[in-house]
Length: 406
Image 1 (spheres, one colour):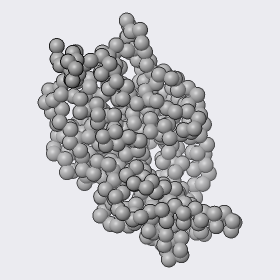
Image 2 (cartoon, rainbow, N blue to C red; image 1 turned 90 degrees about the vertical axis):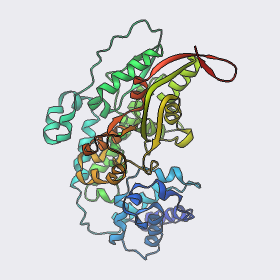
Image 3 (tube, helix red, strand yellow; image 1 turned 60 degrees about the horizontal axis):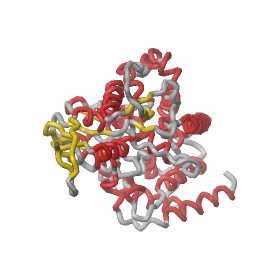
Image 4 (cartoon, rainbow, N blue to C red; image 1 turned 45 degrees about the vertical axis):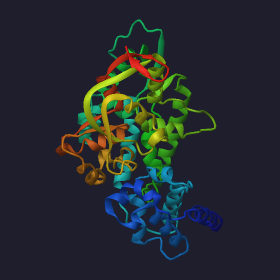
């Protein structure tokens, strides 16, 4: 690395890390800290390490810096930070400097290369349509796949229509989810369009493009992933219709964060459903049950601003409880846990705190694929719209202060 580039990176790292006040609020949203309890596995601890690394107190080859490799990159800490410290940029700068300042690396990059290739293929319509048998032979978890979703649903008599954006993982695994979503939206009086030619949005490659030290020795593969992702984002944004709504939070959050100055993405399906219920003066009723809600760690709206939580609260008969450390990642590592047994162990203690047979509401394909690795809990995984599908829609009348059932 030339001296000017090194000086610039160190200057930016100094600016970013010095913004942190070390208040520790981010620790509650960090899964790795909740899992290990070690301060250096928290965002605050990692930022302190970044400062010591920048000041020369910690060397590039130090084992202490491997805590940055354990980070999920979920950005939950950034969303909980009251002063918006750019943790993701700090982590990326440290990872790049570790590589730039070392002449050798003992890190095994086999898994990174394997996942980069697999993520590219899962995101390809051709591979999902015609190469799944070959992929399933080499990746046993794909044997659970049902192949690409085929439209079998007849929809007639609807004057209005919306486009449903389906993720690559839902296309392969969650056919029941797609069919139930279509049927529920039909009950609201809308026809659902699912485009067989919908391109991949590029979210599945995000973990590959953001890797730092994990990609040592595989710089060409990382650059290829960046190029592939960039092309898919452009293709997806060119395809994206105006009235399109995302069935999964991971794709929606990813696309919303891409090129925000070029196009504002309005695609929150659950906010749209909530508006239709108010507009049509209808309510949702379900047989009494309790569910545990795990929001997607990367979604832009959380807490009381989360439209999914707002909608679930409207279902009469439903009791909603948070999972332990609900602000943190479920352990799915942005889909990376799909093909890595070590990653699947992260967050397991979090889920072991739930009662046997719990109903867990998840909003991302990455969370779904991660949590089905724990069958011993006999838990039931559902997307929010599957709860809506099971609920009854009833009309109401407005009396000036609230809706009443007719």
